[in-house]
Image (cartoon, rainbow, N blue to C red):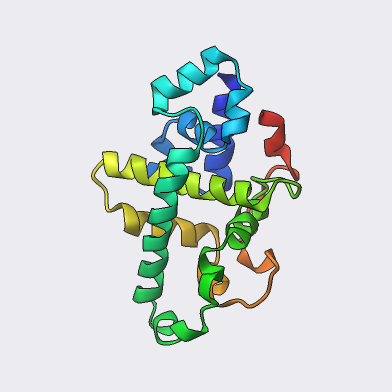
Length: 189
């Protein structure tokens, strides 16, 4: 259980959830969002049962599915509400705004995925975190799409990401937030 709390607290800290209503999301949800099916299978049966009891799931698959759809809606909302992006939407690099490469960059920029993790798996974990946040907000009857959009744009420069033609991740991080040393998230699993 100690790892569950450490992972949840770390994600909340790195992704600027502390001091917001997102801080109240139980840590076990973020722990589950970071578990692939293969990683979940390696856990003791008692731990998998606990995850299912608390979240309904033992890995990130369902949260990733929800997060994928929610992110698409949030992305459309950000573009629609931003006159510059809306007017120049032709300049948005097609699928880049919702690519595994971008999601992997976002996670790596906060040291939530190792550089050796497959890009698809890292992207799935990003979408799973979005799915967890959406699920929690919907349970509280909040305007989840708006809140998620505000939260994501407070952590990453998504407008830059949507229009960038580079394959680097450096321009995505907002502020000087400190994170754990590279790949420290790996030690939790």
